[in-house]
Amino acid sequence: MNIGDLNRILEAHAMWLEHGSPEGKKANLFGADLRDAQLAGADLEGAHFQMACLRGANLRGADLGWAYLESADLRGADLRGANLFFACLEGAQLEGADFTGAKFADGWKIVRDDDGETMEEVEEVEEYDEPDEPDDSD
Image (cartoon, rainbow, N blue to C red; front, side, top):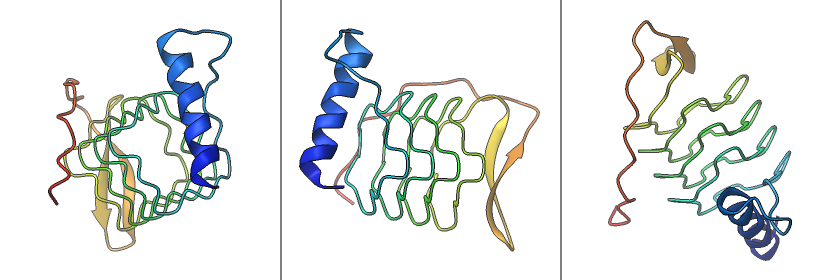
């Protein structure tokens, strides 16, 4: 996907989030190739990323609450400090993704084992705090 098309989709999504106006539209990036995309701090709440390639994408501090990431390729993605409250990650490829400081709800967390990263249900749910602004100094 070229940057112009992505920017148009993200602008329409922002309008949908903020105003619910007819000009706005929820982002549908089903199957999109967003490899190495720079989306740090983006408000992607409720966006559709099913089967999208987000390999190596910078999603640091992004709001992915309620986003649909089923079967998405997130290998090597930077999700540090991202909001993933109620995001659906079923079947997503998570190997090498950095979830340091990412926020989850609904009793889920990322665990690493010999086979890579997986989701695991936990007993306690962490309270949500707004993520800090992304630090681009890294």
